[in-house]
Image (cartoon, rainbow, N blue to C red):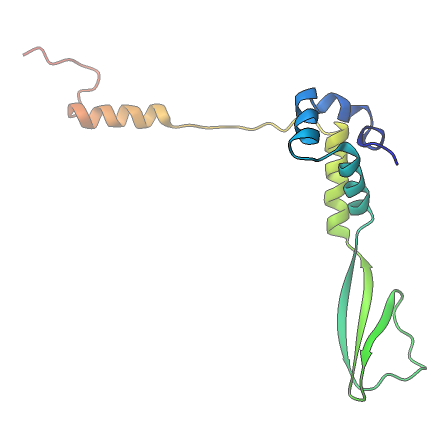
Length: 136
């Protein structure tokens, strides 16, 4: 079985620090092989949808590809259809690319209006004279 570094490439080695790897393996019991196995599973994800059809199903009816009859009666038929889970696969691909370091670092713009709030608070305390001192 391939390790996460082999799957993710050299970028994963650079992006995961030694401390992070040690924590994941020792404290959280999450090994790189475990992550690789989960990522591989998500990259091949499928989902099963169930459809209820009214009426009896005879042998001449062709079911869609990946479909099978789960239950049937004289009035209804329940079929299960295996489909590709495109959303899960897309998210897994994005995660894999992030592990490899293929995407540039995300820029986070943090805006604090602390200074404005502080000035307003001082004005309320001093009655609008926050910048001047009383010399009376």
